[in-house]
Image (cartoon, rainbow, N blue to C red; front, side, top):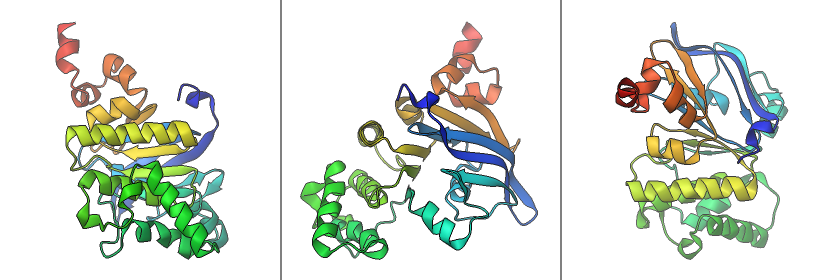
Length: 258
């Protein structure tokens, strides 16, 4: 990940304002994500983290602004361009969103059956390979309810990778997991980023995960409706002059005693 910052931008968010009705949640937000980095969106409850992610993947339409994914604006894209953009991204939702009536293998086969013209044998091989990448090759015949929460999250990441996206969006991947399982998931994210060169955009508020995986972060703040800090989280923890940032990283006491 050391050369991530020298890479070109794969996502560019420019002057984005989002909200519901007359209520603005985020105003004039601009940032970019570098190709190959693990980029984390963080902030307190109600700061707009998941809402921002939903706009970045085209689920919601902003009040104004643009979101360029590998050069194409997902906000104003034609139907054909929109489909092309969606083929470049994979999404793991907070709940995992696996189909409970399908086995893990069937969950992995579904996007391949829906969006490719591959034969059954090729689809089966690719689905098994993706499950193997996340360490679930022995659980292909299991239903989601028959495996642990951490394994469900890994299976959801595997499904998000089914079509070989260049960007993976993860919404609160560690939510509901114990610290050990969360650490294992962090290690998986780092391994996939390093081995596959995939760009990760991760929404989380878990401090250990932030410091374990993030190349760079943006911090959203509810009252100011936008970004109040951006950069390496370790640097922000030690040097930020923003009181909210210091409180978030638990550095207030340390800075006070310095």
